[in-house]
Length: 117
Image (cartoon, rainbow, N blue to C red; front, side, top):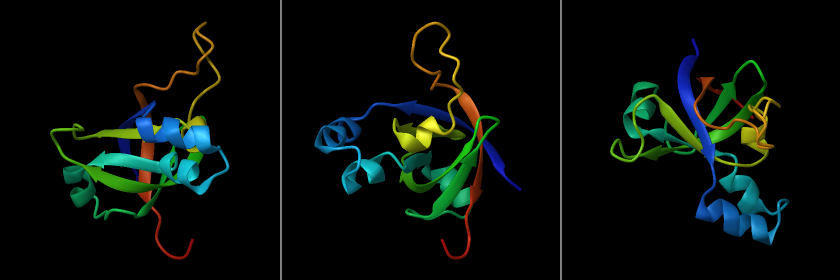
């Protein structure tokens, strides 16, 4: 059964520097297709660093890899992902008049992908 968690997308220094090198470069694609998760949540869900997971909501879905963060760095039940193609798949088109899709504080379903990719 999928787990419901809160996703926050944002900018990171790795995302910014890899973006400057090119959106089609492996470095950028890797940085923007990795979600960070509280280490306790990962353990509870039986996830290891580098496992592939599916994130989905009413807007769309994406497949990413997961990496642990210390519980002091990222609260339980919360995910963080750098802006990019993967996070954009989950953002609705409403910008609330800002020109930027709402990328903070939205819920996603998370489930581990098993088997061959």
